[in-house]
Structure formats: C-alpha cells, structure tokens
Length: 241
Image (tube, rainbow, N blue to C red; front, top):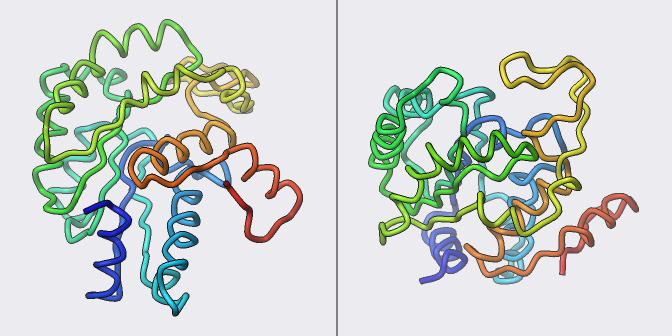
C-alpha cells in the first residue's frame, strides 16, 4: 500500500493521522517560511482532499508535529524519544539525520547506535533522511567520511524508507539554496556575523527538500518554483503542478 493510501485508510478508520518531523534545525526550520515541513503538510492535505467528499476529514485529521530541535544531536533525539518528549504513538515519522554530533565529537559508532535505538521505538512507517549537502566543501567532505557512512547502513533495511538527501541535493545549484544572511553569526558552526549561512537552506532549498519527499515518498509531483511564485503573488492556495 502506498503512503497516500495509508494516510487515506487511517483517516477513514480513525479520523486522524499523526505525522511527526524529527531532527535538528534543518527540520525545525523555524527561521524560514514556508519551510519544507509546512509545504509537505499543505500538499498532503490538498491531495487527500481530492479523495474525500468532506474536506474536513484530511484538513482536520492530518496533524503534523514539529519535533525539530535546533542544535540537537542524535544523543538528544534518542533521549527525547526515550523520555516521551517525542511521543511514539504516531502514524508516520520523517527523521532527518543531522550533522551536529561533530560539534561534541560523538563517535560514528555511537551515532549509528543512537539512530538505531531511536527508530526502534516506533512501530509506524519511518522515512529516514541523510543530512542535505551544505554549501561548504570542507563540511561536506568531513560528513561524507563519518556520519554519512552511518546513514548508508540503513539503506538495506526493508522496514525503512530511506532518502539520500546528501546525494540528491548535489544535483542542484547549491548556491541558490544557501543565500540566508546570518546577522548574529554562529560561533559553533564557524559562520561569522553577517556572512551567508552555508548550513541552513533558504525558501528555495526548503522547497526542494519538500519536492524530494513528496515525489519519492508520496509520488506527488511538485514544482518548487511554481509554488514559490504563487506565494510571491499572494495566491492563497499556491499551486505546485
């Protein structure tokens, strides 16, 4: 059964579908709107509305929860799940693995163990994503040699839906994704005050993250430029196909 049909079936039986987005600041994305979480929620409700006579069923029933924690590591996420801060009674989880573990020098084997322990707590379908490519070659090289290798271990797991954002995002012009000016800077990541943030994608970058998930997980065609242009033109319900 496709994920769209899973959502439809769950809504029909429970009048509710709880979907959680888990990860670090790339997931929380509270610093940009619309972010990829918001886009996915909007598109899923639009698409499911076509399959119900009563629009309230998907509009009210699909509930999306932001469990993205800025600066969090896999240690933090594991603890949040084990202590109930992140609930496990969910219908779908999208877990975008981050790269913050390097700042506290988490060993790669622990990184892998943390992710395994976290996802083992859920019984619902899980979409597991690697960290997107940044606009900093040195950061990318270090990630590819360390935590990215941990992500690759999950590709053969038939119980997971895995998306290699690190490779997928390299298909695009990353300079157009990373244009945000970090006014205060970020001492931890090495971004100086007033510099372009090479770690956090802008609206276009977020729209392309949404595109990858919508098209590959839900088989919903999504045109990021069309969607953002409609928003720029104050279209209340932006189109995306």
